[in-house]
Image (tube, rainbow, N blue to C red; front, side):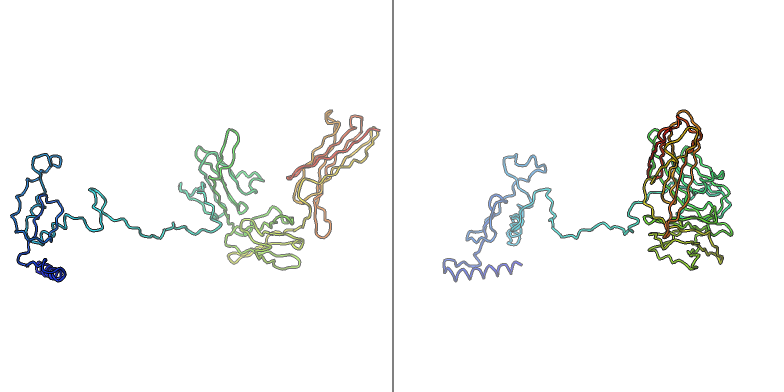
Length: 455
């Protein structure tokens, strides 16, 4: 390394001599280097040429104390020993290394003590998006956990699935956590007030027990919690549970019907259901017309089959009317359901359309009189009647009779004719006045009146 440095200096010297003449002729043998300044930390150049003879290196100044607080308190200055000893060495290489150690790197600023020496970098990162699980549109709404439990034998419990198949004849016990708990079950059990069904409310759960089950008990069983404020309660949608139970019974593929013939009304503004429900989950069910005899296809557009409801007419019209039945096949056996009469209805939905008519508006004393209140409405919508008459305050004896029947109006249209008639015998002066009839259904009520005078 020293040889290469000397050769480099010789070449620089020859170039300067050619450029500036004899004034710069200096022999390599007489080439000397200046000594460092008094302070080893001062600025000096190790390659500065000089004709001065090499002087002895200055003595080592006092060593700096270990404690920084006491540095510089003496009469003589102190320096770092390692830096001063490096300055005393006459070799060019050592002097050059000392100079390089004392000078900060070019184009770099010295770092303060404790400064972070890691150079920050700006690296472009592709943002990572959180993974979202694909969900069906039907499952976009978060599902609430079921509060229903099915009690098994030996004190074991199980959360019932959405559909459950059980053999008829056994006892079913369902429990729902919470208090108070309300229940819903097949309307068949409620209509006949079956003693096999019992419900109890315990401190922490509600209990439903159905003994000696039959295929007729097939249906939806559900429960829900109640949010109560005093005596006013409402359903808690966050605490619900339900299961549809198929009670399988030998020889019964269909849920039994209370009659051998039933009527289904087809309304143009709502769905109609032919309730062919089965007791076997795997049963194949088809719909048939009695005359002309043929199978009715269920294409999912006009007619579809719902396991829990039956055949659903999505958009009923007059062509669907007639007599139909269902056929079920399971386990190599087949069975035919009861027959259903489909009647098309074209009556606007709303409060009852009511009229009132008296047999005579002027009655002599001792005669009989009757007042008729009539409603035309939808075949499956019941109508209730109420009367107000002049002799009501005096507890005048009267006779009131309510009746209804279906009326076919041609082109397959059917309406329900509901009537209420009030009869007064031996007409008196207290019977004269206003006779008021009020007809009510699920959609509202209508009030009409007429007068009867004493002549």
